[in-house]
Length: 162
Ligand code: HEC
Image (tube, rainbow, N blue to C red):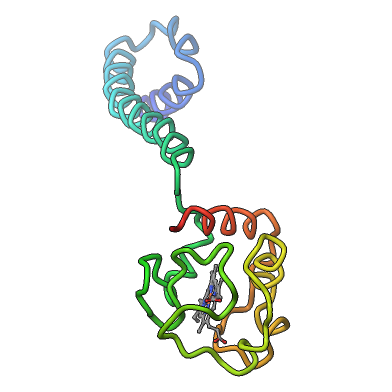
């Protein structure tokens, strides 16, 4: 029974330290419960301080020039951001403002070559919404990004790739 009572007491202490303060009857077990509760609290506090440090560092990185949005991870399977480096697709370095299909040394599909446009925001938004709708038969086997905010984040990032 004592075990149960002190377990309840420990549980209650997690909610409110004052809850068991005046119990008196079993001071030895309540003291050890309080000792273990407070030693358990130390690593928890330390790790939350760690994670606070990580989260406060993250926005600083995101605010820096050229920060890569999460949605760009899927592009990297096929595209390099290094100038002139071809993977499955052409390099995306300098793609913003460039004429579609103009990366030297990359063989574009016939449907893609018919695109007579430059990669401005509106065209990139259309392309990233649904590549196959814009250039039927395209090799860019990618269903598109449904979320407009994510598309914008990717386009803003493309602008930074020189
Ligand atoms: C499965 C591979 C693959 C994925 C994933 C992919 N692409 Fe592509 N991408 C290609 C290929 C291949 C082409 C060339 C299209 C063609 O010739 O039909 C291309 C073309 C492009 C072009 C036109 C480049 C030019 O030189 O005109 C842009 C811009 C582009 N992709 C951006 C992206 C972005 C941004 C993402 C991620 C959201 C992405 N792609 C994901 C394979 C991929």
